Amino acid sequence: MKLDYNKVISQKLDDYDEDEYKKLKEKKRRDDKKTLGRPEWVYYLWYLHLKLCLEMEEKKIPLQRRRKYRSGVQVQRKVSHIHRLKINRKVYEGIDWDDLKNLPWSQWKKRYLDVFMSGDIRKIQHGDEWKCEPQYLYLEVDLRNTETVLVNQMKKILRGGNRKNLPSRLGIQGRPHYHTLVLGYNIIVGMIEGEDWFKTVTRDENFGRMEELLGKEVIKENLWETIIQGIRKGDTSQEVELEKFCYNNLHRYILRTQRVLYNVSQGRFYDDTDISKEKWKDKWSPKSFTW
Image (cartoon, rainbow, N blue to C red; front, side, top):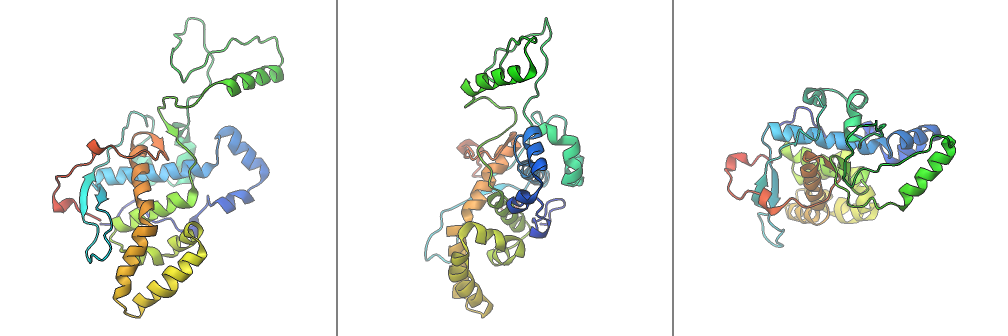
């Protein structure tokens, strides 16, 4: 199956690589921190995963849970359960879904980036209804003080407050890792389009990230010089070794990306919470096996 608007992320187009981000001007980094609260590539990755959720939902491409790897078994990883994604559109209110499909990030972020952000600060007017909810803080401010004094007073209050475990309409959980997320995204996109492990690990788009995550020596000694070269020479036993290597070293990125995709569909990015058991279905037709 070919995807229409989700493609493997090339490193040549990797605008938000961490090393590249460090090369940006200091002023741009300060501005991002003030306006976005975190590097822009975090929101870029959220946008990518939401777009993949949308296409998987439309084409009824399920997440798949596979059986554990069994050493010495020729045929591995039969699918045992599936889960079909469904985006909670209420929490993404304001997004035009056709724009998500068609607009590149540079244009899309100008229109919709604020949807990914938490609520803005607004002025409470006399007579407004106050919300007695833990994610809101109401302050009485004496405007006769200078702006500097007011900001410093607010900082003290915020530092002393407990902001853990607050309910979230939309939110970013934890600390996203760029290469980890892109590698998992690339593997899932590639496999939906029919790629096997050999194609996945020999892709230029993935190879540099694998070196980053697994270490150059691991890739060189365990994968490239033995397994890949053996397969290219026609050694069929190395195909089994490749599968074993990938399930031991790369399959966890698929599992993490599946969890991220599910949570993105519910309005949370980089939430590593497991998909609940009730969401998986064990009755399915072989026709739904698409990747």
